[in-house]
Length: 288
Length: 347
Image 1 (tube, rainbow over the protein chains, first blue to last red):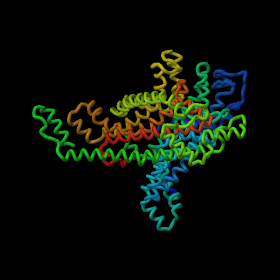
Image 2 (image 1 turned 180 degrees about the horizontal axis):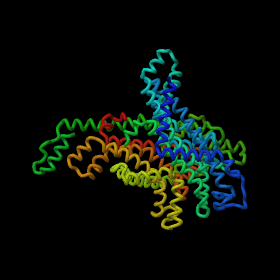
Image 3 (image 1 turned 60 degrees about the vertical axis):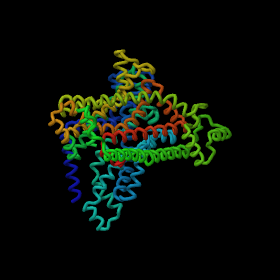
Image 4 (image 1 turned 90 degrees about the vertical axis):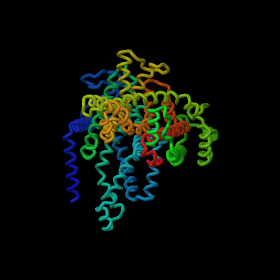
């Protein structure tokens, strides 16, 4: 019974998503981008760290579609590998923020009363913190590793998720199907994770489409400043930083990674808008 | 309140008659209740939200910095233990952590943020004081640019939803959102600095140095503000009181700018708190692109060299600024919206 219902809801939402031309475009661009990043070893004959000092600063050509950088490394390869790093950081950090935010918000909303008040007070206090600086502090304290980067980003990005999930759970927990669970004697953990949280999935997905580009931008910001992903591992922010330094003589070093980042943000933006409309048709009527 | 307003209008219309509706005891009582509400609101905001936030921030970041493995004096060259001990003593790091924390906190309260660890002989307060004004000028100009352009685009879009103006404004907003400043800045430099040669590419100090950095930093915020303003205005324009104002025969310009805007800007104002914080950190990127001597460089340098006091000082500074912005935003929102104001801050 339950599985049929959620299946049809998802199918319905997906059909609505595909009817939206902007969302379709966003989805196609994003899928192509991810596929290209994953298939990079098949697409280019170069390695991202293979230097070729005879061929530095080469403009785009048949051998190097997007040119080469100051060490003669193929830009296309570096952009695709950098994309893999950027997507990985964004996904991993989103997952971290999801786990913390959904659990925290779900618990707070389900338990209610004093505990809820206290837990939300903590969120209020944390909301006042300067996140970006806090991530910089974490990086400076614990060193600049990739693992740390997304744990640090995820650990500061869960607050809004917690608030949203809490609101949803509070609305749901007084409904009959939860009362039925309680009558059946299910434990709190089972009710929360098996029955309550799956019902907030739509909202969680909508908010995720805002979180992912936000985290990609934060990663690019940190790498641009030299605090994020460390060379020789490429990331879009780091590649853009290198490109800015050479933009007068070798603009392709900037254009490639800049386009990749902007296109991805563009695609995520359209896809997010489409998902919001598809998963929450009520809000769409309200908005227009 | 309504009686008071009527009497004002009346005495304006018939100045010679004087004030025939003098303010009553009731009005005075209402005014004092209102004042109390504002004071309660500020009290609540400062002592129950701002102070705990700042205390938690200082404690958390201090503990993180102190309990982390590795010494701030680690370098490529292995220092003899005696030197490390002497350095630890000099910076007070040989004391127990709680003692260190209270020492640090009492210093902060007196405006002493401790010595810089990566630039010997200079204090954190001095480093921040030298560079913060530059970042603040850049940030506030960018915020002004974002507000001006964003509000104009948003209102333009909301006047005729799905019309040509709306499409244009939302397309501009989309560009602003999809081109982060690290991409937007270099593009502007390539076009206006290198190709056309209209504006200087790097530097600081002259007014023309400001143009490109301010646009670069402000454009993303202009885009968000345009979207928020459009949403807010559309919602406001669909309300009954707007229909009343139109039915009354007010000009469209007056309906939009005087009546709807007041409510329509509220989402924009709520956004300004986070926006101001984002602008300050976003300025780091712009400062790097245009080689502006702002705070960003110092912070990056401190982070790379594990300059603990400098990082701590900057975290506290930004925390303080954020609390300040958020409080100001809440007060402005309360002034604009009586329903929030009269609840005494229970937003």
